[in-house]
Length: 144
Length: 277
Image (cartoon, rainbow over all chains, first blue to last red; front, side, top):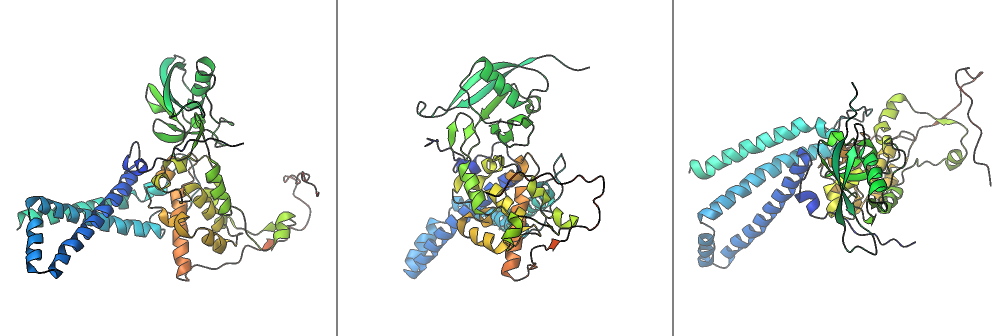
């Protein structure tokens, strides 16, 4: 019998709309968004610096176009994204090698999961990213 | 004193009739709820009183069969395992599990999940096929070796983990938490020798490397199976294998049955129910 099933895959909503999900779900989404942001910056960076190959005038023109206060804030956001993405990437790398998730256990209610087990590591990651982002913010805006 | 008072709850149910409805739509039903009622009980009441054509899957009513996985108030759960009172809301929104096509109303099409599950060979892979078809002895396994996979063997294939996974939501190629967790269940079994075969089956975009530990599969699992843990352990094993650091072991050997008379408290094995053709 042929079933006319209606597709119901969530698509991008599946990771953008957190809904009633947990802490690590938001880290997952933030990691992806920060990764996409860094990729966008990288492409723009290549484009801007490539103007140097055309000549000094093109370079000066490109640099003046990206030197406003809006771009300063944008650059800081790239730095903050980098801070989070790098530190969280180390957490994910460690977890993907089997660290911090614990060994298989007998599931006894209330269940203890690997997610709860690595929660302290996830919190530490956020703290470190926050400290680095604040330090970078001071360097970007206050200490100049 | 046992509380017996009823209260009224609104059941918002996602309906979809193939061939008739262009899109799924919400339908509201007001029902009286008694203490102790589960969401599954509520659905039966809705069906009895106001929506006789409402369809869903359910069977055991005790969180064992894995049939009644649904999206209940935004979270994949078993309807039979979820008390209405624990939702702490006067509105119970019930929708079919996302990331699966809808056959009708609350009935998801789980076939793609089961096909992937089968492709990852969820059974013992050994050379002694005859022994497996017609067992004469037991395979040797210590209680410690059992612990390596016991947690993952509690999976009831309800599909809640697949509905919660953000990677499954965007990537149809990805095998998903249930099939991967079950592949690890057999990889971690000392009686199994199929690691290399499953590793081949997991190559490309369907394998564990698409998992980035959102952890939702483990959070929603009604049986505490922790598929996220299984997937991370699988990755660790794969890296160790690539670096030639993985302990290579032969599948557990057969052991001779103990000699002497059977102890009285141990019942005899039942008669065979399958006979040779």
